[in-house]
Length: 134
Image (cartoon, rainbow, N blue to C red; front, side):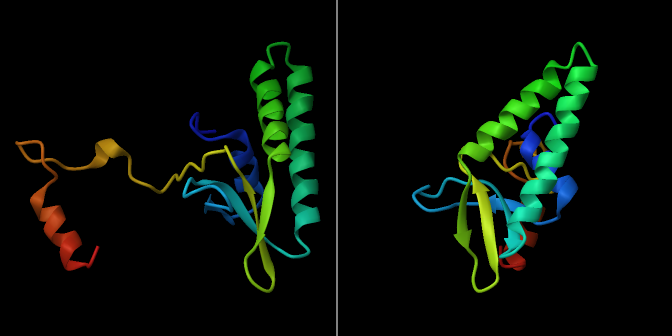
């Protein structure tokens, strides 16, 4: 598990490939962890998360030094207390968790930017991005 990633995101990513960043009502542009499900998929999602939590709790009890698993369970429970939903159209809803950041494994790290000798972004990459319309 990535140390920057919230344990709930790790659990959701094991269950579904529909995790994403989301900015919900009254969040004023702030983004958080979200997962899209079908209208009838919320119960299944909840039951799968509960199964994962039971596994974490069992791991924590089996290991005397299970503080990491115990903290993960507590963090996930706290996130579910703040859970909210929005409609995503006719058939889907998004379940989102204000205060839980979304960690994008695919986003380039800030230190991956090529720089020229003067510390500015590499002009060749900039030209390519401009040509691509970005």
